[in-house]
Image (cartoon, rainbow, N blue to C red):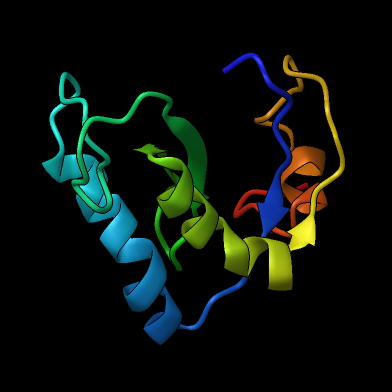
Length: 115
């Protein structure tokens, strides 16, 4: 968890969201926090979890922020579309003002109350 993180923005059609994002979010909700197996594949005991932080922006909804805790093969499979087709976001300080319109515009989201 002390490794650098890289953000990607990826626009998906409804079908791709159903195929790729929904299973990950369901795995997050269905897996107890105290379990030692992967949330995605439910494989055996995982020695080292990889974390993927997901922020989804559905039309007309508030952002949904989740943390996906998986084994390395599942993390790689989940991240591939972002790496292949996504746009890498600029690095920003951790204490960045996330509520400002400039923050949201930088990641391609137009805030409802943008000035």
